[in-house]
Length: 98
Image (cartoon, rainbow, N blue to C red):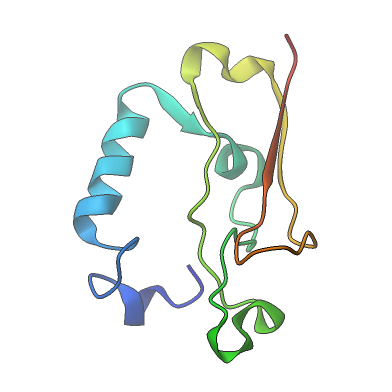
């Protein structure tokens, strides 16, 4: 999230309750593939149409590819296609070696 301090507990998608649910999912044996492979890289999967948010890269990370820890070693890449236009969301590509 581009502006976490001003959005925390004020906007759907960034409440403590939602963040807690996601943390529990990860603690239950799953991994957010994008975050694991790309660290703290600042890329987003959603931008509001208001205020030219996309062109300013003021976005949200609301799209995820989550896999179990058991198969994470098969994940080759997890990439957000930020240049793909067509909606207010960007696709995430997950490449798995099967």
